[in-house]
Image 1 (tube, rainbow, N blue to C red):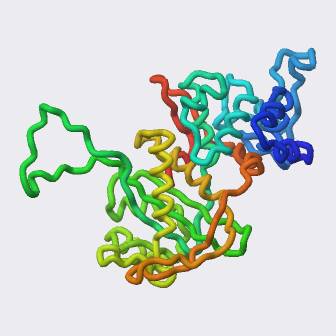
Image 2 (image 1 turned 30 degrees about the vertical axis):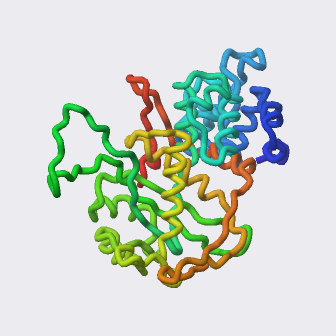
Image 3 (image 1 turned 180 degrees about the vertical axis):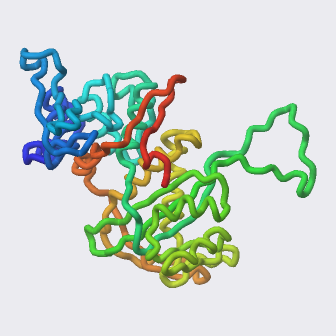
Length: 365
């Protein structure tokens, strides 16, 4: 990325700065190109690193749209723009709208709902809804987690609504209703370095069909290195999958054991709480089919934190004590430069007005 483009991003501190930086469409296109292609243009079809610019209507020579390029490979000759084969593929919105939405979503602590984003950008709510999902697809992280990794499961959703025509429940086991909540598996990587300023680790979450060993393997195995040090509670699925990793330690919550020296799952439980608060406070409700996209955004915010120090967490005697790194949020204006590098992740409109994801990382694993 050129120094001028990087300076443009680093100088954005307020809403007025953002509006001034993204007011010109040509400047926004150049800025987006520098973010998507920091080392030069690459053909999204074949990966060839040489291409030519096709003179567009902005030069008065041809009727081609500005920013159109053609691959120089004789076997390809593919024509593309900066949004081709990305979540912005075939967008009809101005690029300045996309960059404003990107800045707003990154600056918020827990995200923005589609209603609020629509009011801010001056677009319709369905358009803002698709913009939000495109941003979540951009921030999906593909790196495999290593080091010390904590895993846990939790549920999303509330109790099913009671209908007056439903029969009354009996006592004992007859009165038990099978939960309709969404099951989620969460994975959090502990900081590899506790030096102030170092990265605080990544976080992932995924909707699973159940808490069986097969579901746990499908969610955890593709995301965690086999040489990782796994930590969990004593759920049967976690106990079984832990045998495949280099080390696996557990805490017994049923015996009120939550911390044993450095063995705990408090980090992943903190992430679980962050997911619940974000959904309850910002989105209010998310569908299980698109929940993984929301988890991408929440996990991305978690990964942007940095270590600021260490402190001894004091708990009751029966819980024990443990050292936990203190973390704080990183500068999100610098992070915006790495967000659009998502070639290969595509989002299309479905016939019923929804979205169709064409990406290997859209679904967890």
